[in-house]
Image (tube, rainbow, N blue to C red; front, side, top):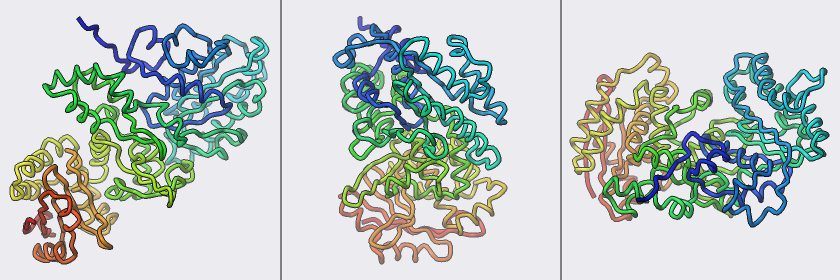
Length: 528
């Protein structure tokens, strides 16, 4: 009888995973390589294995050789001498209401190391205590110190929108990190990781040799699960799930790939699966959207509102690296947060133009992102939309019945309980058509119908495109006009031509909205 596989969902400590014989994807060759440097920074989305990465480094630098038996690092490391390690989990200091609370949390975080190495009476601030600890550990052990900082930005994400608290919180965190450069001679290795990228000027002002490996191709797969690792290390798990769902190994592979794969962290990155979602899927034996169990982060929603982000344009953006890899406090739009938080990822890279194409990584992110935005942008509940209108609309399109789909859409729009602030939302999107484009984009994405709004085509913009497996639906929306004018515009400007070359059916739909009833007044359909 095959032994049950153990999945380390919720377990982020390398030692516990190895001792408990949980599934572990071997990244130790990359870890060994990156630890040849001195000061390293890595940005990755939440639940992508950053904490596991830091605890693996902790065990490595503590010389726990027995935990690494059978792993790639054994062919690389010959020394295994232990170093004093300060593993600082800064998530302990998030959600603090004041600078005083933040300082107390940081001091509490350092207290285990104070118990071990002691503290001078004059050390009062977190930075002073850390400086003292590094010096004492170096003198006591005769070896350089290793400093691992996990979730360095956790306290700052809570106050990104707060001009009153952000400067003071940033000053406190800067004071904590200042000893890292001042103590350089006593430090063997320093690793800093988090979600976002604050500039060296504001947070790490003294660490002028901090190496940011976030976009370096050789470290693209240091967190997450690559396609090669997926089909080799996790082949038994794919097979297990395929038997449960009654499909082939290849079919299950494709299902999991579309749901959890699709991340790229450099222009030469292999495709990377979300490790948390994939392992939780195997643990629960169910394909579902696990990355969003805790919801879309409030800091992201706040910043999207702050920058008045047009959500219909976020799914296919061409930009230079400086536009999305820029420091968080230098943002002029929400793009850096969307990328660094994992809602967008690199899909293509044009070497000649030095331009990246960013898009939503996969189905799981598309659904979760949409569900998180629905209440903010339309006042609608995601579950209500997903199991109400969206499911009915999708089933109608699947049956090739555009007329039933349009009747479902008409009934749904007429029943939207427009929330307080609706007029403000209309003002933000400039017109009724804009509001409906937002609404359409969100509700169609609830079931992963591939929906695009304002699609660029030969110098013009198509209002709305929905792509099904066997057909493409091209919509033109009119508030000040008729359905016939909308359909004539589709034909006259050749909106459907790019999709006719793909071989599938193309259905053109001209739609007129009734301002009084706030739903569809009439529509015309033409197929080619």
